[in-house]
Image 1 (cartoon, rainbow, N blue to C red):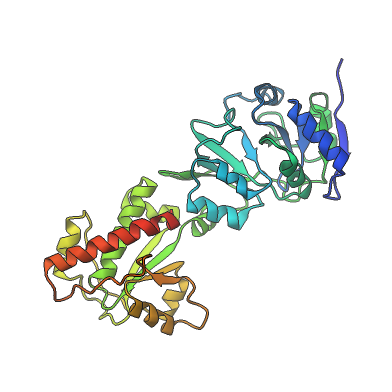
Image 2 (cartoon, rainbow, N blue to C red; image 1 turned 60 degrees about the horizontal axis):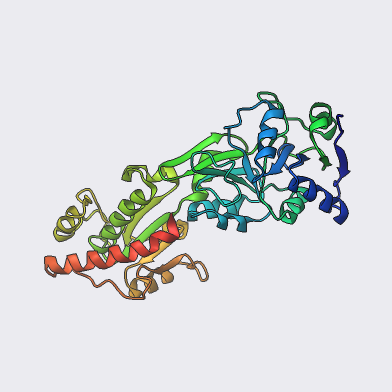
Amino acid sequence: MQRRARTVDWRSGAPPSGELASVVEALSAGELVALPTETVYGIAARADHAGAVERLARIKGRDPRQPLTWHVGDSAALERLPRVSPMARRLAEKYWPGPLTLVLPGVARGVETVGASGWTGVRRPAHAASEALLRAAPFAIVATSANLHGREPLRDVASILEVFGDELAFAIDGDAPRLGEASVVLRLGPGEFRLLREGILDAAALRRVAGLEIAFVCTGNTCRSPMAAGFARKLLAERLAIAVGEIGRFGFGVRSMGVYAHSGAPASEHAVDTMREQGIDLTGHRAACAVPEELAAMSRVYALTRSHLEAIRMLLPPGKDRHCALLDPGGRDVADPVGGTRADYEFAARQIRLAIEVRLDEWA
């Protein structure tokens, strides 16, 4: 005997507790539920219920190997993944809840049935009713747009009932989605910053949020700060599994400057030789002077010594220096090797590299 989905009116955004419990119970038992989001309506299933996930693929006519999206009611759910990069965290902080699906490396416990080749799509929809449901469920929920495979998404409960009503336990009426288009999908991980589906957010905006503009400041910008910039580019590229010249594709920019720099001066000979041994070429470097407008525009500014940090703060308006810090998280200055031996430069390079290795976990 065929059944018909029960429609519940959650347009007020605060679902009645009895109905909320009934919908959670249905999902727990492997039933399917149509739910609203700010983009399009979706059909949801319990992520760790293989039968529900298979049925969801069947009623849509889609390949069961095609990945679904894990829908979460709280950004803290990301902690269930093995590692979430600072880039993904910055994007989630900026755009969640909202129309951005992040496809991230790793698979969380309870979502194994939908992880595609070790990647998981995660989204936090901006809809009060769905958020309440996602938070109430003691299990992970996956969803896909409410449409037959290859067709336009359905935009109202009446249309969903007409196509899928006999396959659903509940259809949640939350009004027509205000955006009316599917979420942007960004694949972000080692070697990957790729829009899988374009939409209301473009790649340039996502890069600006995901990456950082980083500056290093010393005195003359001929040894310590260009060495720091060289290490930062190299270590960022290694972390992102890309070539050094590609860090801009992930939204990163790295610069160096000096508070008393003579513009156009080359890197010192010992600095060039020391960094060449690290696989970093400073021969094209030319010194630049630190100016307030450029310092203010950076995401992070790292001073090589406490005196440099004080000089930076003097250049910026009061309260506008919160993105500025001493490079060494341990609070140690990097001594100026100018006029010293090659060993002095090598010592400074080791100290700079160690500090950047620590800072790297804040960046990418």
